[in-house]
Amino acid sequence: MNSTLVARNVFLCVAAILIASCGTATFTKTGSDATIESLRNFELAFIDEFAVPGKKFNAAAFNAKVNEGNARFQQAIADEKFTARRPVLVDLKAQFDADAAHLKSKASRGKITPALASEMKKDVNKIYDHALGR
Amino acid sequence: MPSGGNKKRKKTSRKKSELDSAFDQVGDESAAAAMKEFQDLLAEAKGDSSELVRQNAQELERRLVLLKNGQIDKEDFDFFVENQKRDLRVFVDSQPAQAQERAEKLTLHVLEIAATKVVPVLIAMI
Figure 1 (tube, helix red, strand yellow):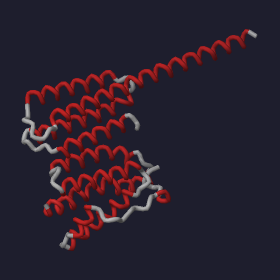
Figure 2 (tube, chains in turn brown, blue):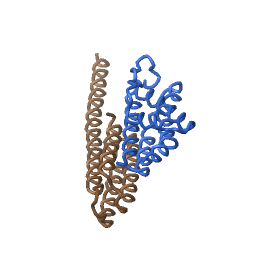
Figure 3 (cartoon, one colour):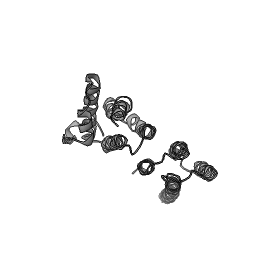
Figure 4 (cartoon, chains in turn green, red):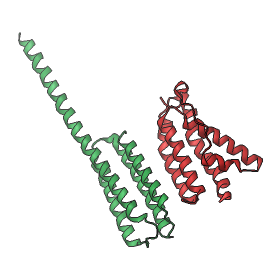
């Protein structure tokens, strides 16, 4: 009788721990997804701000935005609870670095076209969708 | 399971695209052969069972048309090809061993031919 009670209590404890850990994982995953969505919005806004045909290139504003982006990505990587997600964030950071370098090169020479901005945003959305498993 | 699913492959429409019409104007024999190889691979990729392979082919074709029409330049095109390659390497590596060769042929290889053989021909036409 006693052993049945002990077994039942052990089972209930294990079940409770499992349910609680699932809840935490879901919560953390949601937070991680939100971070990725926030980085996506930042990068799209960055392209909108600097990939404008005919707009005079403001190096100081551009560098400040790149620094802000670098800080955001580094923070996101440091805060990421899912270790498996860190390489994904590192890949997203690599995309941001590549976008920034290309934008700087083109915008500083006044060679931005509407198609460039539009295609860059398509690539950003695609890589972020893949990062979120969509 | 992408790429390998031959049975599921959609029939590719062979209606002439804007690019096909441009390739028809290529006079040089070796360049014409390279364009033909590219067109065949692109058509195969556009009809593949994997959405990622099809999407990559459509993106590539759209960007070649943008390049031909002067809406983006070669630097932009090369930048986008690098983006596509970065994205696709993970996909190719994640395929089962027997499907990897075909996945690579229809993605990374098509991009390589586009960048090295097709783009110079299109630029010469502008």
